Image (cartoon, rainbow, N blue to C red; front, side, top):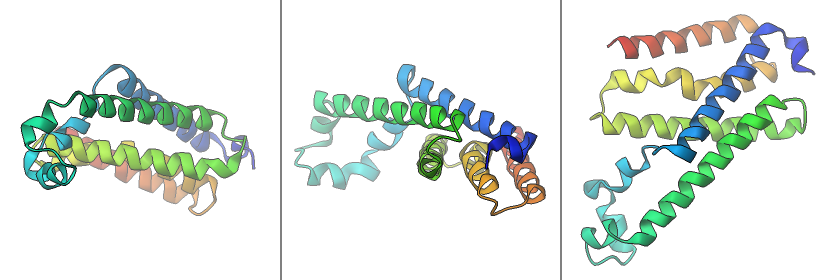
Length: 170
């Protein structure tokens, strides 16, 4: 059914998700998302790096090909998030693609949240602060596929917003 038939909540979710994806796409195009937090952690990546054939951590960290690959990956994620935003705005076209874009988009947002959390020494409030970001596409998908009533969506959104602001306040 048309999103207009679902009312103001659906429209607010639609534009919220689109704005969220656009903002993160912008970050991927013009700023530096936190992927380096993981890649430059020798304790976490050391074994993987040595299995890729690098003689040392220094050889990996200074290899221009690694930076080029990371830039390619970052731009690719940015393109995906931009397309997810466009698909969200064009919600009634090719509806079967909505779950793919929203699910993968939510996964990227969760990964970004976890990397920021890692960067801040695993402080729980920072992880909570990202709750609304990674969950919003999921709420939109659940609401539009009629798997959850509007009352339950509103309760879930209130909980996600509460966790977000508790994390921010802490």
